[in-house]
Amino acid sequence: MKLVILDRDGVINQDTGNYVRSADEWVALPGSIAAIARLYKAGYTVVIATNQSGLARGYFDLDDLEAMHAKLTQLVEAEGAELGAIFYCPHGPDDNCKCRKPLPGLVDAIEAEFNTSAEGVAFIGDSLRDLETGLAKGCRLILVETGNGPATLAQLEKSVGDNPGYSLSGQPVTLVADLAAAAELIIE
Image (cartoon, rainbow, N blue to C red; front, side):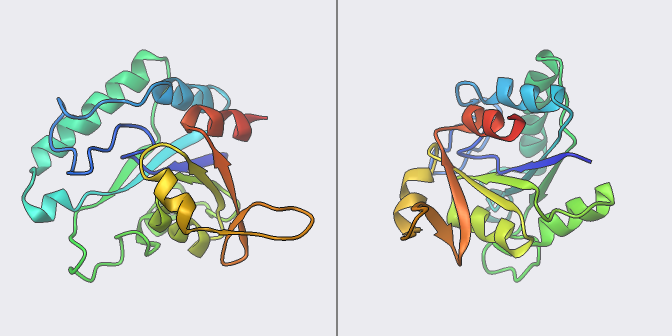
């Protein structure tokens, strides 16, 4: 199975910095929906792994979250594609759950659902916690420069030597402009 794991806010849609709270506030980033469709049409199962602590904080309810995900799903289907699944953590940072990124619980659930390993799978995110989640599962780490990408980039150490680039705990991190560039890289 060819699998790709995506973060949501800042990768697929605009991240408001104050929680996306409704389907009306959920706005796709330019090219992101077409990128998902391109991955799907190239034979990839595209799965989303997203922290949604706004639920625990009372900023929106489950109906609001489902409306956001319905909007995303409809946009993807309008491009002739489909999402494999959307996995989300509804907990707050102090809830001590195992599914809140950077812990690997969401990826564990993806592996169980699809009866596969995430090792070597592209994990595309815009935050350090996305990269840390992928690192814990042996994923290929891809950082987009959308959303929190610029701030995350500033946190990463630049490697030295013959192949200068970015890494996290010794694991290479590939930097791309956006989800469309990530899709192109993966499909090549």
